[in-house]
Length: 438
Image 1 (cartoon, rainbow, N blue to C red):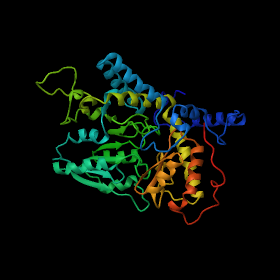
Image 2: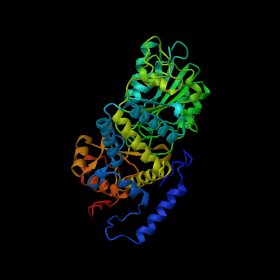
Image 3: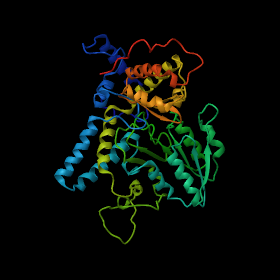
Image 4: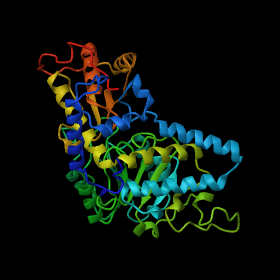
């Protein structure tokens, strides 16, 4: 289903409703091989078929590394074949690099001139940090739910004169937009936030924080690594000045590629002190007389890109675009709401906000012994990860309610490793082994 042309930033609920309606019709006339008792939209099943790992595994680790898809496998083969046949076909590889910039721009509502291809989120933001001498407006504001690597970068700027201001979660372990107010004034150069927290799935209200940052004249920078590819984002509508995200998680690509958006209206004010030949106006002009900075976001690029990861990441993003972020986001919201209700019913304790508007594609479950719980689930072919003592589950368009059943069944077997709520209903997931979506 090609919804790449749908308005970016909308959840397209009518499409999701149509998918559910189609699935109900299919359920009323099941095929002889159907084993799932759940209503699953046809597009979800079609998407799922791209991921061979899912035939034997329940993959709930997209916030660490997405399941591998057939289109990424084929893209990797295409790269290797281009190398074998062409020897050093750099014109072809650079063209793929430019295709990746264009595909990502389309995905987030940007223009290609606003996109740079970098190696990591921290390296990309370091290029931005190098643009400032911190003599005027020296304050940097970041939230405590930022990924540590990004906070390390900002702390390091203190050696160059930056002043660090942190925004902490409240007693409910939430960070509301108004929590930034005390940290903001005319000395703030930039506000750096994580859209979704890596350890508990908390989702920040980006437009509200953007408005607050802009009211004091600060840049608003977003690390979208833990969300991009799981729901619509429109950098213009959300008031984002800089956005970074890697491709190895919800964008279904490989490590080694980070994509950075820089709003075109501020490009002329930013001149990175670090560069490389891919950051020059003409990378093919091998002169050594001077630095000729690219006139668009390419100025934030440095050296030779990770070409295999470029191929993989382009394939992953194009797969996402072919189904559309609207239906993808709606299905993930459906799954996380279903899981949250099941966990509460069964007496487990979550570290993720109950409010759907405050959570992303991950649900974190509190553990007594997460170091044992993760491998125990792996023995049951359920792939999860952990952070901050929580068992992290991450949900994508290839996941189904059958995956929730499998997880709940396993968690009930591992109850001694989990934090228990004060009250618990009769276990609905302890009676029979769950079915598996084909």
